[in-house]
Length: 173
Image (cartoon, rainbow, N blue to C red; front, side):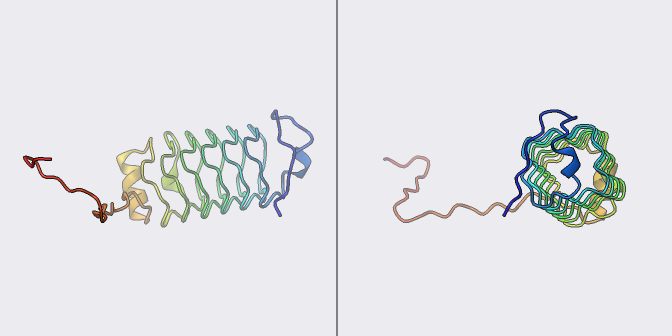
């Protein structure tokens, strides 16, 4: 059963802060944790889509398997955090510190990494980086060499199904 926690409405909501350290699997959709210190927090498998975590200290936090899609982690400190298998689809990571972070198997498709240091991550193997923005050529090379995946999925051609009409140019209808 997923834990339910009152959603924070400001960065100083005392009703959520004392409990924030151990929230594995908790639904925190749209929560505002901007500038909070969540060093070492247990947020594995937490639901944090659209969360506002701009400037949050998440160093050494466990965010493995967490859903952070469309969240704002701009300027966040994620040094040494575990984001293995996390969903960071279209997440704002501009200027985030990713040194020593585990991004293995994470989904960073469409994420904005401008000014961030993903090349300093401790692990990026199998991280999905298709469409990631803000990366220099050097960062892409380093990440690719460390097994991050920038390849677009192979398209499967649509087969002609029975009843479909195939037409050729110049054919009469």
